[in-house]
Structures are given as structure tokens and as C-alpha cells.
Amino acid sequence: MTQITEKDIIAIKKRTELLQRLFDLLLSDLLTLYRNGNQLELNPGEKQCELPGPIPVWFIWWQGPKRMPPLVRACLSSLKRALPEDITSLHLITSRNIGGYVTLPSWIKEKTSAGKIDPTHLSDIVRMSLLDNYGGLYTDATFYFTEAINRSLLTDRDFFTLCDRKKDWYDLVRGRWSCNFFYKRTDPYGGSSDHTKTFFHFIKNALYLYWAKEDKLQDYYIFDYMIDSAYRNLPGVREIFDRLPDTNPKVADMVFALNDSYSQKRLLEFTADTRIFKLSNKIPLMETTADGKPTLYSWLINRQ
Image (cartoon, rainbow, N blue to C red; front, side, top):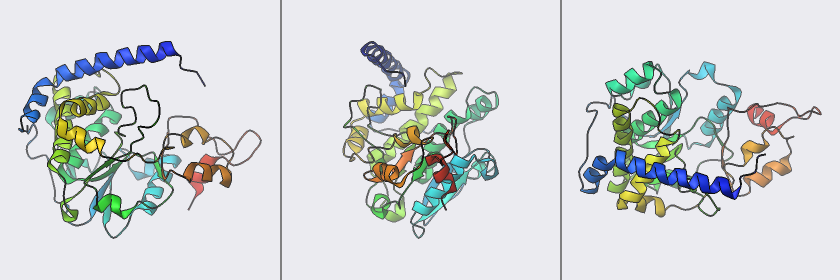
């Protein structure tokens, strides 16, 4: 594995600071609007249905369930096992059914069709539209759950994301959030605070505004830069993030062991203090090691 040097870290920090200033400038008018207690509605009528009752859980796989790779299928199965069935309802979002939930702005549709917005960044837009309009839990397609989700996470908290701020991070996020795992409490369970509502509404409109003006990415991680801008410039948003506990410290560790031989001891090392793991479908994955032993990846995709 390539080692990151002190020189690399300095370069990363300089680039991060430059992009922070850029996104503050791009979002300056929107930040002023929300800081003054106002809101913007760029896409009236986007909400397409009502979802009373169970807490919606959102899982996006644009190609549909029949075209899921084994790892994504295993992650979806783990989510189904982890959800408390009596208070949640799982919604698998595809390119065919998204219109039944939200109608995206015309410029988002046009730039997606033209290939200017790729599926990954379209998912960023859609998740914030779904959470802003309906609330619930959004989890990326490659999160793997090893145990049931605690009911209190869904009923007692109005906002949640995965945090781990104890490590010596040098990137933009620094463990303050996971942009691919968000929760916004729904009305039947107490609803969300004004600050939580502001966060999701602001980021959705920031994404809409960005793509109304731009035809390409200023940076692959524009979603994180928008969250960072809201965090630094909107005190209420900063408050909802700062009160969150650090959880799941090994969330990003298991992915590096997927091609290692499986052992219960190794699995227990991961799951001793972590229940949710961010994996990846973008790396070569093997079901056996060079000497023919089943891998951790093999165990995950064959687990019933």
C-alpha cells in the first residue's frame, strides 16, 4: 500500500482549503438566505406521493435488483436482516421507479441524459431529495450490517450519520459525517428539528443550484464540500453534527480484508466495536485465496 507522506498531507490540506473557499463563494447567496431564516424552493411539486406510517429506508441501485453484483446483493440482504420490520419500510430506488417518489428539476434530467451528471452524483441529488421530502434512513448500496439496527436510533434521534472524529484525519470530512449514510426522523416518531430540516433542504438546493450553473464537477467530492460549507456557515447545522456520538470506528476497515482468508476470529475483531461496514464493489473481489481458502468476501456473499 502506498504511504502518504507529510508533503502529500500538506498538498491535500492546501487543495482542501482552496475548494472550501470556492464552494463558500458558489453557495454564498444560498448561505445568506438560510442564515437569515429563509428558504428556497427551486423545484416545487417534486414530491410525488405520501408515505405515512413506517419509517422509509432508502437503497438506490439504478439498474434494479436483477443486475446487482453479489456484494451489493449481500449488503441489501444484510440491511433487510438489520431493520426492525414493524417500524420500517424498505424502498429500493431504480431508474424505473424514481419518478413515483420525486420529480427532479428539468436541468438535472437533461444533464444526466447528456452524461454530464454520472450515476454516483445523481444518487447524491436523489438521496437528499428523498430525505428532504420523506425523511427516513438512507444507506449506500455497499454498507454491510452485521447486527440489527438499534430501534432507538430510529425513534429517539431526529438526525444521525456515522461519525468517527477520534482519528488523526487530514481530509476534508475528518470523520464528522458519512455522506452515504444519513437519517432524518419522520413525523410519526417525533419529526425532525428545524435545524435538521434546514440541513437537508439546504444541501438539496445547493446540489440543484450547482448543476443549474455547472456542466462538470469542480471536484469529485462536491457533496462533502457542500456539507462542510453548511457546517461552517450555518450554526444550527453545526449543532446537529457536533452533538452526534462517535460510532463504528472500524467502518472503513473491513474492505481491506475482503480478499483475506475468512476466520471467525478475524470477523470478531472487526465486529467487537463496529456493526456497520462500508465496503466497495470497485475493487477486484475473490471468493478464494491463492491457496484455495474461502475469503471474507465469500463468507459475506454466501451468508444466509
